[in-house]
Image 1 (tube, rainbow, N blue to C red):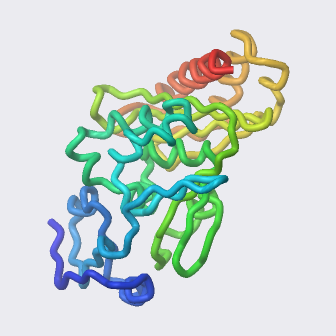
Image 2 (tube, rainbow, N blue to C red; image 1 turned 120 degrees about the vertical axis):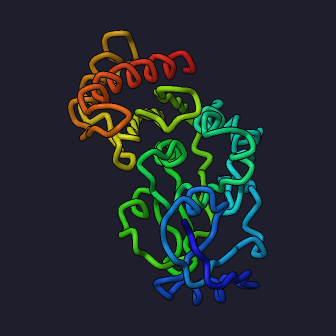
Amino acid sequence: MLTIGEYSRPQSLDEAYALCQKKNNVVLGGMLWLKMQHRRVGTAIDLCDLGLDRIEETADAYRIGAMVPLRALETHAGLAALTQGAMAEAVRHIVGVQFRNCATVGGSVWGRFGFSDVLTLLLALDARVVLHHAGEMPLADFAALPCNTRDILTQIILPKTGGRTVYLSQRNISTDFPVLTCALSERNGAYTCVIGARPMPAAVFADEKGVLAQGITEDSARAFAEDIAARAVLGGNMRASGDYRRAICKVLVRRAAMALSKEG
């Protein structure tokens, strides 16, 4: 049970940042995962008055506010074109439409949850985040920060770098947390594979051996999948064992590579 002492709707990012410096205060997103915790919160900080609920397009990027709901990512035509449908695929299994109308991209990214479909895809897209105090940084660097970092996530930036993207996941049932997630992207001839729900947070892998450099075939896709599965640290939990995840990893990566070749 989550118990909240006070509720605050700051009118500026500076005010929100000052409030979140107190250890027992917490920033609310959609509050869908937060409410499942067993803790007492001093002040719940609601960012809904700060204009962070918009997706803005610039000449070279999409800037996604932290309070944008996951449903908006799923239905946005520009993001669909940028990711060849991978954005919608990454979020469509997350519980249901009502849930995705409330859950925010900022909450998904800030939590750095091991089961996060959103984090897996955004890492493959070379996303960057903007923090009110620390400024702009690559999402991969943010994901490595300590979980007790006290800052305000304001935006996620997706560069318009072109290329191709595929997202796949394995679930025991369609709306359950994923057993394993896989995002594969190609940018200017460089391939990036991200494996999430390991069950640890998503990890990024480059095609270090250049397996796909000469083109994607059934043989190169299978070799690439074997390489990623061998390098990934995979554990077990109530949904699957580490060995099962390794077997699934080989399948998802191979399928993603073949799907990427068809896009090309």
